[in-house]
Length: 109
Image (tube, rainbow, N blue to C red; front, top):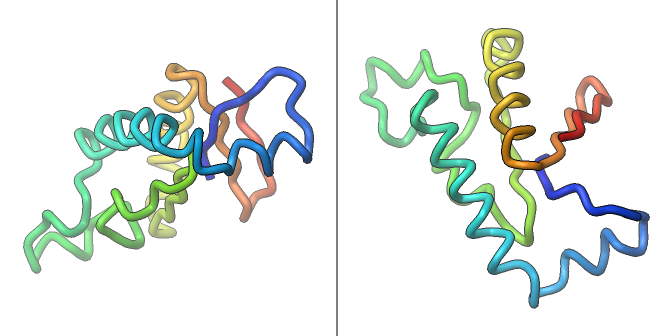
């Protein structure tokens, strides 16, 4: 999951940022970040049948994974080590946090 880090962020703030007022702006910013990701790692829905098995992404279209100021991404297992550090770097450059629920790891900007 990728979302903006807020100063003084706590559990109650989490529910506030999920409100509809903020979602449109946050989604637009996240779509810009997603565009950066797919420049390096193409969306699986754009790949041919011969290429789809080599996609780093576990699902698509990726634009459907951006909602409410968050982006959920799933990587195919063989590519996690290769891709995750690049994704973390791109995410940090734009001031976003990234949480890896499988490793229970939080990457701050």
